[in-house]
Image (tube, rainbow, N blue to C red; front, side):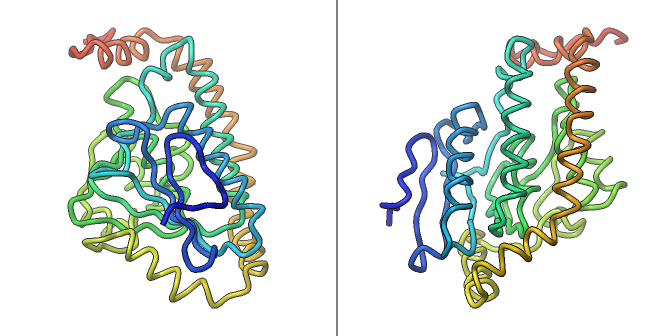
Length: 262
C-alpha cells in the first residue's frame, strides 16, 4: 500500500510494511530510473526521514519497472553541472552510510554506473537472474569516484579493477560468484523483504542502528577522508582533459568518441 507517513513527493515511491518497521523504496521518475538531481534529492529526503523513524529496521530499495537504474544522468556530468552533481551524489552516499538503518537492494535488469554505486551502499544485495551490473564510466572517458572506493571493499581489488577498467557488465551469476550480490531470486525484492523479516525485525531497532554504525565506522571514515581526494582527481584532473569531454559529448550526440591518442 502507498505510504501515508512519511509522504515522499518526487520521482520515487515508498511503502511502509510491517507496521512501519520496513520501508520499500522504488526509484522512478524516468525511463531506466536515471539518477539525476531530482531523484538524489528525493532519496536524500527519504534517508533523512529514515534516520528519524525510531521503529524502522530496514530499507528495501528497488527500481520501478524492468531495470534498477541505467545510472547517473550523463547530462549532469557535463562541465557546467558536474561539480554540483558530484557534491550531491557523494553527500547522499555519506548520508546513507551514516543513517544507521540496514539497506537491502533488489536488482532487476540493468544496474549500471551511478545505479551500481547506490547498490554498493547496501548491506545485502539480491538480484534477479536477468540482472546485469557494471561500471561503464570508462567507456565515456571518465571514471566512477564512489565505486573506486566501494567496489574493492565489496569484491576485492582484482575484481573491482576488472569492472572499473574494462567497463564491462557482469551477469547475475558472475556477480554472485565474485560477491557483488549476495543472492539470486526471481523476485529479488521479495527475497530482500523475507531476509529482513527473518533476520532484522526480531532485533531492537535502536540497538540495530548502533550495530550498523559500528560495522560501518571505517567505511564512514573512508568516505569522509578519501572521497574529497577522488572529487579533486575527477574535477581538477580528469575534467580538464580532452577525452573526458569528448566521451561525454559523444554519448549525448550518439556517436563514437574520437580519443586524443586514437
